[in-house]
Image (cartoon, rainbow, N blue to C red; front, side):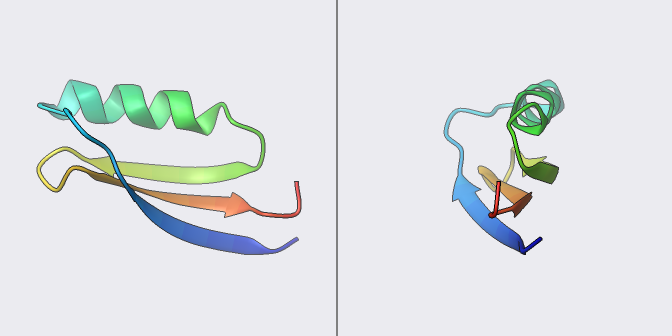
Length: 52
């Protein structure tokens, strides 16, 4: 298991509901261990296992 963290740009998030929607959707992807979205900064930090 090799855990990595990436910060990616996410456009058009305008509220905390957008953050939750992004987090919920990204968490469904294979290998994703955690995600934290930030609408004011327009990015999401994703922790994932890159061996999957």
